[in-house]
Image (cartoon, rainbow, N blue to C red; front, side, top):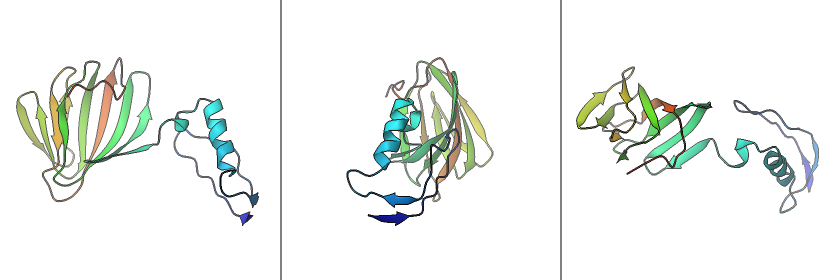
Length: 154
C-alpha cells in the first residue's frame, strides 16, 4: 500500500468517472474493481469491448459507431491477409491511408495505394491483403442494418 499519482485520460466518447490521489490498495481488492463495476452498472460499452482488437493479421479499432454505421481504423501487417468473407447485412467502403492493399471483390482483383478507395457491396465475397513491406493502414466505413462481428460468412 502507498500513495500513487493517477491521471485519467478519456478516449472518444468516454467521460472521466472520478480521479483522486491518495492511498491505493494493490492486489485483489484494488480500486480498479470499483471502476469496472461502475462501467458495468452504467452498461458502458467499455465494460465489454476493448477499443483495440488484435488479430493474427494485425489489429483494428472502432473510431465511431452509430445506429447504421461503424468506422474502423484497420492495420494489416506486411504479407498478411484477411479471409475471404461476405456480409448479409452491411456494405463496406475501404480507404487506404498508407501502404498497399490487394483487394478481392467478387471475382475482381484490385491493387490500391495511398488515398485510393473501393466499395464492397452487401452480399459480395471479398478479402483484403497487404502485399507490401510496410503495414497497410486503412479506414473502413461500414453501413447497413446490422453491424455485428458475427455477420461474417467465410
